Length: 496
Image (cartoon, rainbow, N blue to C red; front, side, top):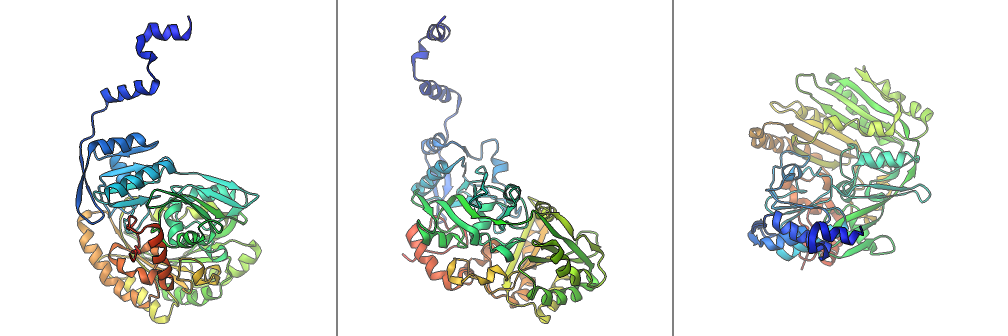
């Protein structure tokens, strides 16, 4: 029997209808209509979204539209920092750039409070919102390495661990944070520190090009040849100008086996270690990255450790590291040749998803004796313990002119971070108040702030974040987002 005769016999004349009509009829009879939906606007008020508009948005997507009634919504609304328990009215889980365009157009048309999520690692919780729309890029993952051009094309939701695994397979690397489950999008736009940044620059310094969906829903290519002003702004200017749907990074040759690991001392030696670190890090070669961690695990004694990454010749590295390894009486020395990707995931257990956290940070130009004394004093305050991290800056970061990118804090020598975390939501108010009191002691040594670690109560510090580049940021905001649709970030307000 011929195919047409078989279909007509089995299904009747309905098969003569176009296939898409059948699907539409089926959906109409099996999917309940979407009710009108109350959502939050950009100005903080509320609006009622017609159910037909929401349904049309859902039907236009290759990905999924999740509302509170849908399976998967509860998981999709969660972000890395469990202190932020927010409930968006809509979550658009984008499958590609076309979904981003539709989400942006819908948000603009209805003037919705709009958050953009890549990996969801925002310490300030601005990758989500209450009552608005979340443009979720977490499904847009992928890495394509061109070993001849030494470049990588990366989706915004790609985890840094994925990027490292793909690039190191070719003996190549770019700066990619220190926690492997961080998303590439947010890290890059805010600056991007990592274990090879002193040698190769910040993640944003290695951004060659990007595909961007602007606030008007238009596709724009940013590179040195096309819209170079926008590329300038994306290099450290955060999510102020649009939604990046693809990043292109410059890669560098590097042995995928490095010399690294941690060396730990009891807390009693912390002052000696920090004073040594202050001198040792100032003259360290670019290939050496040193991150200090003051940690006080539950039911354990406190200790100090230095996370080491030497990413050049191994024999030379052993010589450079000898003074560090001979310092004091280490309780652990785990420095050894190891795969770079192994070291890159070694911090992951300290930063699991879902824990409630309050984070403060600042750049500082020196680690003086007074600063060291204050750090040690603050670290021991009870009842709430802190983790304090010091990341050495300088090297290639400091040799790039301030005006070359939106990232402005090029003259800092250290990035200082204080973190408190907890599980019980009833502790939130007390923990936050404790950190605010405690941070005042450390903030005396601040010389600037880092966009990727600005908290919600520090929004007024955008001028300290962008420094002398602030006027250029305002000009870009006027051009690409004059209505400030993308405001859930370290926000630069348009002047119009």
